[in-house]
Amino acid sequence: MDTTELAAALRTRRDDLTAELDRLTAPPDETTAVAFGKRIGDGTTEAVERLSTTATARSIAGSLREVDRALAKLADGTYGTCDGCGQPIPPERLDARPATPWCVRCSAARA
Image (tube, rainbow, N blue to C red; front, side, top):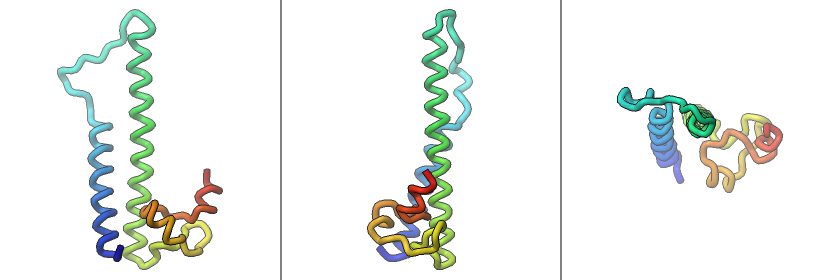
């Protein structure tokens, strides 16, 4: 994939992630009543759902940062270079994860 196609694909991915993040973080509909019931299970379900939504939103925000970083690297000519060690990121890894700023070794070290 050439850089023009890659940039377009990354921008599309960014738009999709932004839309999903907006959906997850939108305030609840005013007509929807959120209340905790008298029994433990009533509030627990809502609490678990909110935790899940928060975790998903954080993950999407992280993916957005990676896409933005990849677009910046495309613009400055450093795309395909690891942010951690400065070595080239193998093409196979970039094919699998086009927005990644790290090689496998540096990515594993961050985990």
